[in-house]
Length: 232
Image 1: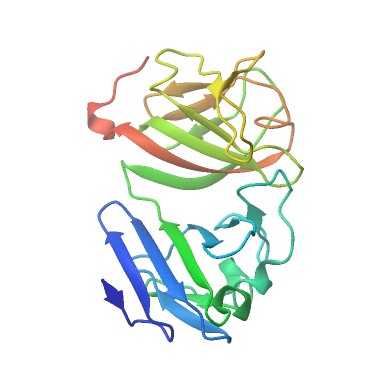
Image 2: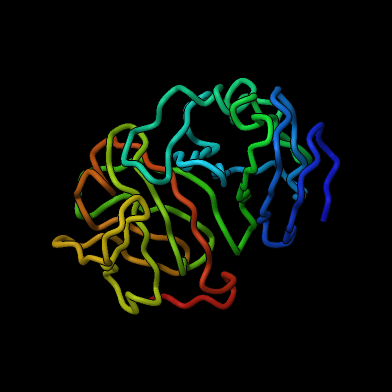
């Protein structure tokens, strides 16, 4: 539906219970705000110019304030976030109604698309963790057994990684895809993670998933609400 909560009218398809919305808008050449259709502030937001060859801009609540990642690149986070948001995503006027855009995301006549997420207890989690460089790796509490996990190292150049329990039906999960490449799926030489009843535990020691003191962001979705989950 049409959303006029912001200074720029957006078109929004939102599932408020699931904490997810799809937003399209066309800029007017100046800083502005768009309505996102959710009842909470988005914690993870990716955008794409639909009419130009340009990176996917990715923003996450646990990036350094004013920083950005790119879904199609391996780059570490960089401090160009204010190019896209007023003050950077985590420090901007983004709230439970609108997202505050800088003019780069509001260029005149540019058709844009955005995907916004926030955590929903028992269903999804947007968060971060610090690696320990050990095969007895960091445990990340989600409050549910994950069905699907996307993560990215933020302090160094590494690929995005995607695991799910449809392809790996038993632990340890090590069949992955890289959203930033055109590669087919691959199997890690070293194990990657155990999917547990209330989160996931890293088993790999590679820099892409569990470097000592490495910082990582993730987006995870549940296999079933916690009260129905069983350990594997």
